[in-house]
Length: 176
Length: 176
Image (cartoon, rainbow over all chains, first blue to last red; front, side, top):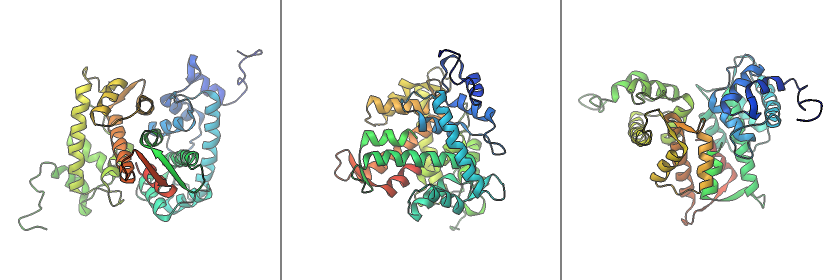
């Protein structure tokens, strides 16, 4: 340990994290679900389901350990709060859901340039009765970000075209 | 309607389907969850979560309607029963879960040729404490099948290499 106690001891997020993480100071998807619920982040929204928590882990888990340390958790927490603000901005009637066209506007505001057809496919996949809950909004945002990052790393000429070997394609597509 | 009544009226699966599908004779993910639970397919396993039901829809929903008709439902039911038999075969102690190496053996038995690294990534994503539940086994199998099909359609020279445009890549990766 660092001299003078744990380096994050004064971070308000640390207490929730440490209580769940235990001795290894890392959290898996199930522990992440507990930490996020304890943090109060979701507020009036439904708590995150396990599948979304797993996707959150894949977003930051650069060593494929299936777990997050405190630094990664803090990074996740920051991104989630930004997405929450964006979501709340579109959820004007505070129903806890946004409409398809609002979700499309949010995706465009993130800087993604997608065809109407691709946006339609995304809406179909992440909506329930035409509306998108915060949990699904987060899952969608993470997967869109991860896939775009993976694509860009392989689009070396920056022409919007990338080549994948089968094994690599499966790794990218399955780990989100 | 066909002369002599509904063409599927004598199909034992039809009663469950028709009861939930209602007038449009199609089911969305939420209705699929109800039909599958009513069908008794999962048996002693945990019932399917919504996210897995959504992935099931994407597997067969060729027109991106977000819904399945009875013919697609029947096709899904057949595939699920095959996967259930495979899963049960590896779940020797009937715990409702299989171990990572058993899941890897199952994937290989399906005919996929993946590197140990890709298999490791898949195990990390779909396991909980090193074990894979039937629900996650199904989600994993569907996504692996969908991604492989999408890849093959673009690997026209059958060299194990495929080129994607960004918009197309996002459609493939997001709709599973």
